[in-house]
Structure formats: C-alpha cells, structure tokens
Image (cartoon, rainbow, N blue to C red):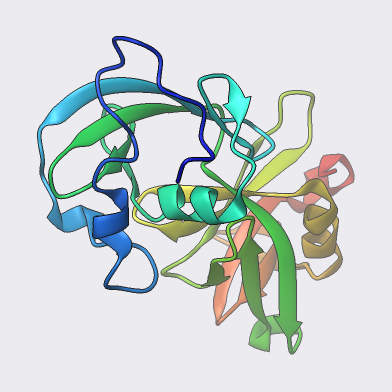
Length: 200
C-alpha cells in the first residue's frame, strides 16, 4: 500500500483508508452496490483512456493496487466513485474504467460464445447480461465497449475490434439488414450493412 505517492495536503480523504478491510475477506469485487456511505469529495485519481490509473499525477505501478481499487469502483449517477463501507470518494474516468485486452472464442455463428479479459484480469461472458455496444469514434469508425458489471464498461482494444468484425455476420433487425456479432445467443449490432465499409 505504501507504493502510492503521498496525498497532497488538504486532500479530502486518504483513498487507501478502508480499502483493505473492504476486500480482505472476499474474492472478486466488493458488494459496493450495497454500501451507501457519505460522499467525502474528490481525490486526485484518474483512469486514463489507455486504462492507466494515476494518483496525484503519477501512474500507479503495482497491478495489485490497481486491481484493489477497481474492485471498489462504482458508477453513481453523478460520477465514478471508490466506495468502502465508511466513505465514498469521486475520481475521474476519461473514457471507460476498464480496457478489454483479450477475447476467447468458442464455436462460431449463432452458437458462438465470447469471453473478454479486462486489464485488471476480470473475465466477462459476452451475453445479454454483459452486452457489447458500439459508439461512434472521434475520427470515424466505431468504438466497442463491453459491460463488466453495474454501469462499468470496458473499452475493447482496437485490435480486438478487428476480431469482432472478422467473427461478425449480417442479420435482419427490425426490418433492416445489420452487421454484428453473436455471443451466447444474443446478437450485438454494429452498423447497417450499407455502412459496413466504414466500420473500421
């Protein structure tokens, strides 16, 4: 825990307080949806677009610390927060809190099953419960995201998006031919077939 830079004077809270206790007795993410502690203001913590976590402007170098923080992360209506049973602090997320870094594929076509690994080593079964969504990119094309938990999404790396395109197919959705990809019986539309040349 002492690998983090020291907090700046006047910071509203120590972001490490209570985190170990929140995770000590359980594996996986903490039940942050059950906790409603007081909001203690923002801390100088940021998740960059490339998935790097920063504290006081310095990258957090220990993967174990990043995973610890990610397990107490929650998206409230107003902001992203780190939550323990006793406090809640706001942080900045530039795009998505997680990055999708690896796909495992089983089967093909409608019977296809996709699993996504995030940059904090969470595995997500792409399904109706953990869907994919595709949003316009800043310079054209599409940006794919996968729902990890709660309202926390992973931005799928560009190289993996090309895999999704390679595994995709067309299907009629509400009377329109759409291009998309199947996983666990659910179809996730990327774009109309007429726009397929502009997907990437």
